[in-house]
Image 1 (cartoon, rainbow, N blue to C red):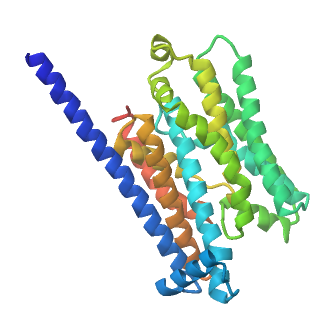
Image 2: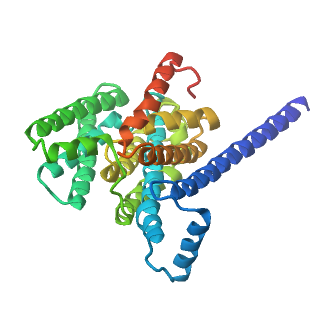
Length: 351
């Protein structure tokens, strides 16, 4: 009788914990939405709440007049806010996947060379003086090709721990891509191409328009869907290959699919934002401390935190000074101290 009572008490405690966790996720969603509204109102051209609601009403009723406030909100701020939310959510979601996959809280989407490969593609496009859409396409292709090379190397090398080989191959290929970026920077026009290359590599959403968001949204959704459908198996995979096989999960195939999905998300958003570090490292770890390692809760929490964080950083970047600060600088200012603290804690609290 006591065992049954203990089981009932444990089940009730788990149910309460689950409700609290989903309540926290709902709070994060509400806070992210409130931050988006605030970001739409502030800037060099301030907009009042009444003006914003008036523009929203005219947009819903199809009576837009083409005024300055409408242009600022609908053509500049709303696309940029949407892009910040999308980029932050995708990077943080991919970071949660990689950290769980490699069972290491110090792993980020850069570990397989995604960002570096995308950076090489974009830098090559700038060097060739291609239009912005072609540069974004080159960035996307560069990120995907880099990870394909990394995975091909990992498959070729036999007899060693597959996760370790994958990480080491990512470091090597990423370093080679970084060296090629440096070579192109040396050859680039120092008065025209080099400043554009440098600014892109530091990350920015200053030139983002609605078309950019619509161009990458399908790729992000395609990458996100399998992560949602396989969320329980990803939780099992984070326990290790042996445990996964014991529970009937084919680790090799699942890892390949998950890596491909996370890479697709990362490469697509990096193509419009440039290289923005630390989001995929810091936000998933904070989410794990808040909701635990269970992937079905970790993924939405990480994506909401990443979206809110990058939106806050982007809002600060465009309002703190007359000259816009690249996002990569601001995310590093926050991320670097957190990374040092994370190193000091080691693996305490992982899983």
